[in-house]
Image 1 (tube, rainbow, N blue to C red):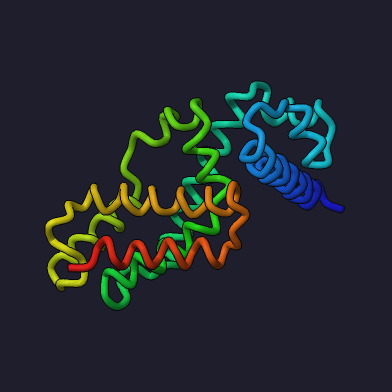
Image 2: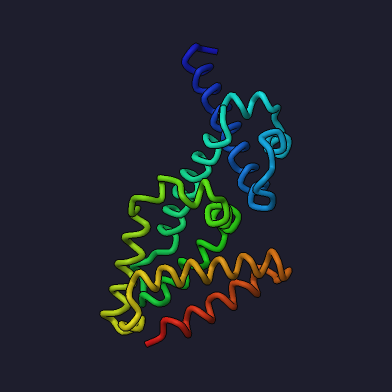
Length: 191
């Protein structure tokens, strides 16, 4: 095997290991924010020293989770096709896409270090696209123009959080929680 192929295989292995650690941490910390890095290592199927090699401090792991969640939000926003059809329907698709990011987004909302993470300080392309979609909904008449775009954004996040909590604490199915979320969204933003 050439040196170049060995380096590529090693970086692929490193990327998979890093991904396994971040994914395991999201699921574990969403259920137990006090879980240790040792618990994360066990959930990821790696040793504690491996976790510490990738993330020397808990804050490093949390920053990686924050970056990962923002990347997933960007991808989910693209999948929602916000420019297709009426804006109100686009927001419904967006809710469905974001709902699948429940553990990561719940963790972002509930973990103080992540809720105040500096990565939230800048408007992202996903944020701008969302606000543009609301303005389009105002113009086309599918979203109540009396609802300011920031209000609609906060409403969507509040509804999603309620849906995630409904599945976690009330034992509701994902389908039931999403149905309630979308029903409430339709009523709340209707002109």
